[in-house]
Length: 90
Image (tube, helix red, strand yellow):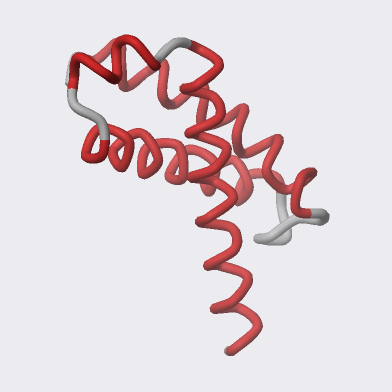
């Protein structure tokens, strides 16, 4: 993966980290920095998951900024959901 793609995913991850707690209601980690980290990790996991599911040719046709942001937000939401379940059970 080229460096510029990673930087784009990091920026989108920050946006996802800001959006995801608002969608789910409340903060997950107790602070904004934790939410941003969750967003970045969720975005990277979401992007990696999308690359496993869709072949390169189809990803280019389906891709774009909107799809990328949606995948990042879904990845962040999934990660936040998992973190909340682990926190609740602990």
